[in-house]
Amino acid sequence: MALDSQSLTPAQRYALVLVDLAVGFTDPRRSPLASSCDEVVEANRQLLAAFRRRGWPVFFTTVAYQEATQARVFREKLPVLNVLEAGTELVEIDSRLEPRRDEPVIVKHWASAFFGTDLAEQIRRAGADGVMVTGLTTSGCVRATAVDALQHDFRVLVPEEATGDRDAPAHSANLRDLNIKYADVRSLEECLALLD
Image (cartoon, rainbow, N blue to C red; front, side):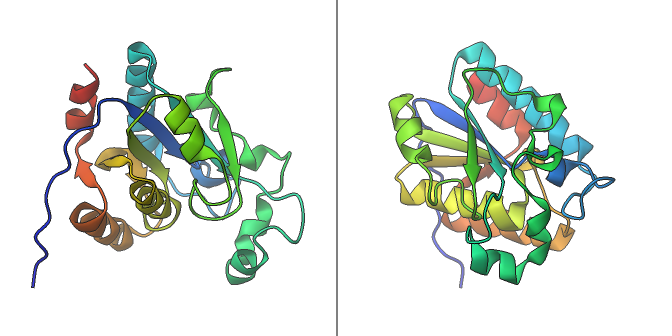
């Protein structure tokens, strides 16, 4: 039986949260976590330019570990995460999406950009009541971040073409589920139109 899901009222001001668009996830030649995702990077480049023109807040995230105790159970489950060592190239944001000096890069240890960070407070201080969640991967950190954004009472929008996953069926299934329960999944074109 289908749930009675409604579209959210658009936010007055969105923050863009670019999840894990770091080399470790965007360059399959250098990292086992990465996939070919040039189209996702390009969609994010377009959104980033639109947010900058509008003067709305932008936040990047990356996963980086300095100590064995950080997210130890998560890393036990997915040992490949251990390649994301702090200070290495893999945790740097992809140069095609170079953050500006006033665009924070949130370092996280778990899937959600909100868990164990002050991202929610930073978004509120920036005057945003909504969040556009983009990045990699849809079934993991994008999903966790979108769900947590809703749980912080933000209006959540997910631009479909600005997300990606190594697993195409998981990508589609998670976007569908997010759209039913936690966010509005919309086309890149629709999201860009909100910023014009």
